[in-house]
Length: 466
Image (cartoon, rainbow, N blue to C red; front, side, top):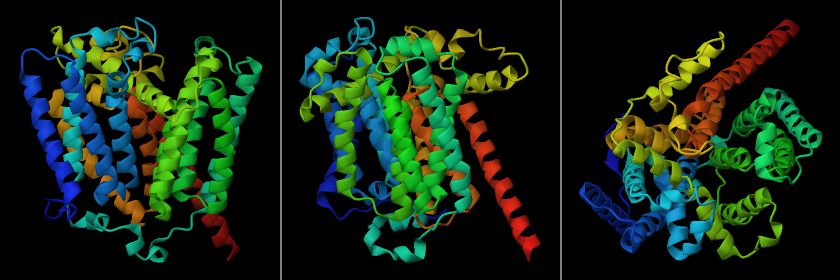
């Protein structure tokens, strides 16, 4: 692997950011070891500082910024775990952001502990991202310093042939459901009740996200354009029924894949995408409740709403910390094992023997059904802080390696397709538990096998012609 070393920045500001992050990490560890932790202005300011320095590092450290997937994963993780804290610090009215029961976590003694744990893990993640070896030395340079033509990838038309029809089918299923059940701009609670048991709809959403990731990773430019059009139409229908994650997770990874493939990501593009999110996500949230008259085109208000909306994920994290503090122990990977066992055994008419073991089913120990989760929260619940930190040491290396291979095209077509689809699920896990992982992995393998079979069939036909 080569000698590991911390990226040596010649930028004074970047070096200062690193010092601030290490200092904050030590403070958070100190606070966690103290007997009484309270959510006060000092802790909030530390969280805000950690978030700002994290975002600045994304743009100032080429090890992160030039790494499309790593950049997206880290930035999204920051907002997911710190967004609500920031919004609430500047406006206490966010205590009424959702129902009283949904916002009860703010008054929990475990709330500040959850915030501290999340930031300790993310600060370690930031440090790991700056660890390099000779294979990632290219990240020290900007895209303009390489010969792009020598590292271009034209794409495979067979990927178009597979993915575009799948995307069309997925789009038609969604449109049919919206029209058939008159879901357009309905109340989100009613939409959830209606679509909950529509298995084909949930599977079609997976097909759409995986197929467009394949297209961005290995399709032709024309195929990508067609895919963007289909995805855009599908997104409109998703937004009309209050679905955001189904669009956001896929869009995030496609943005990253595009930047790595065409080496053309610019700060302007990131800024435009960010402004679009600021306006769009609060709009869809308000559309869910049917109160469109409350929507404001104010960037400041929408930005605060965005932080709160994504950062509300600290609620289930607080619940899991409270659960551990009440005397329950970590489960050492059993939530993941149970998910896979249940998925496999249900194919044969059974179920996991651990499904009735409450502590192995995250949804069973959540105070409110339907709560999302996060990869950090589930890792902490299973393996504690140390286990989560160790995971992110390998995770950062894994993402950098994928980024490097995509960037320099040092990757086979099969690997290109597999990793692009896998990244969709990893981004999804940023704000969800791992219960969807087994079915996504199965579809990843099916789609990859479909491509291999089609490619071999095409080669056989070509050889017969000769």
